[in-house]
Amino acid sequence: MSLKFPNDFLWGGAIAANQVEGAYLEDGKGLSTSDCTPNGIFGDIVDRTKTEINGLKDIAIDFYHRYPEDIALFAEMGFSCLRVSIAWTRIFPNGDEAEPNQKGLEYYDKLFDEMAKYGITPLVTLSHYEMPYHLITQYGGWGNRKLIAFFTHYAQTVFTRYKHKVKYWLTFNEINMSLHEPFTGVGLDRKSNKQQIYQAIHHQLVASSRAVKLCHDIIPESKIGNMLLGAIAYPLTPKPEDVWTTHQENHGWLYFGDVQARGYYPSYMQRYFKDNNIKLDITKQDCDDLKETIDFISFSYYMSCCATADNSLRQKGNILDMVPNPYLEASEWGWQIDPVGMRYLLNLLYERYQKPLFIVENGLGAKDTVEADGSIHDDYRIKYMNDHLVQVREAIKDGVEVMGYTSWGPIDLISASKAEISKRYGFIYVDLNQDGSGTLNRIRKKSFYWYQSVIQSNGETL
Ligand code: BGP
Image (cartoon, rainbow, N blue to C red; front, side, top):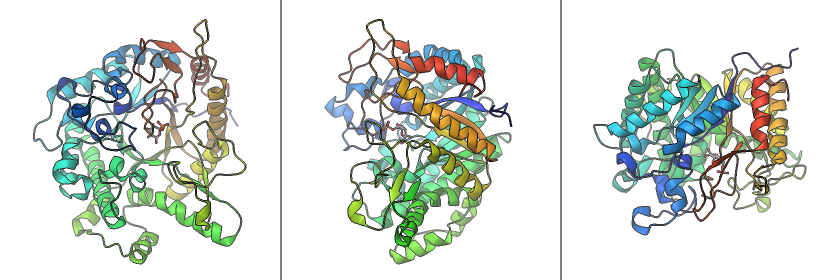
């Protein structure tokens, strides 16, 4: 069997508006939730306009102004695809307006045109960890059913505007994170109870399916997918109770995919809601809307974790309160590195849904050192990505249909969980320090040339 990837495989990288653009109030943009969390998207809510804090996220890596230079660098690596997100607040600054902000629409026109110059296919996320802050203060976030209409109006506006430029779309980034970080996901206070969170998630799932329907109607040749954090858990031991807990733990994120890919709530969730006395307001119209299912499944994959029936072993503070796997090493940020998990996850999702898969985030956050001659030798990043891509190739040989791979943060950007720049993912270094100083100059790392040869050979050099 050939060592190559499919001929139409999409190679590229993934970025998110709030982590790269900066210009956070420029050209009429409104304040978004990500602008209000200075300690990272998972931090406390602070209105930056009043406090003047966190200048780092105000400019981010200044992609808003430097995108032509950055896209030229992506093209130099040979990207055929770039995943970006639209900042909802550039189009509808408050989220509830009838008319869109023209300057915001024009910005993304220019961005997609720049990509087209190099034949780079856009993959666009409608909402990547941000929403208009006004929708939280005035409506209570996704807890309010009205958000469905605001979101679909936004989706309809951008589908109509960019229908000749964008064929691949995603609805909500890592939608399953709403369970763990309700502020970032559904705009609810962290202290919200399960009933409130699941109701808000339900509204978001309905909004997602309505966006899918609109996309299919407005851009018939389009493909629209969901986006999951691929939070795969293994049993910590072969003890049957651990195996069963793991099964349930995986349901905690797979249910989002089940609803979006199958069009209804799975029976195990009905049982879960009953056991936890959660009574959702689900209308007949909601059930009809949910039937409009996605065309493909997309996910991020950084690490795997373990599950156990023994709650005392859970580790707090690491995104999913996971139990560490004794057989795996971890990044400096405690994310356990598991390339085989990539193959396992791809097989699991394909067997479950029989829909094409798109890996839309994968990468290693690490501290880089710039040598005296200006070079950056990030062999650790090359190893991480090479090992994962080898497993992607194995999964393709297993028969899994994989549409593409967009690495996370092909250029250094502001970390989502910590709002820091030192956790770098890029093939391209950005001269920016935590205090906001730096020239913002872009420098090619060693991994830049490695990825370039991987793409050029369509994976043969792995
Ligand atoms: C995913 C998010 C991204 C990105 C990535 C890395 O969960 O979709 O926005 O940031 O994780 O996370 P971090 O930036 O915290 O290292």
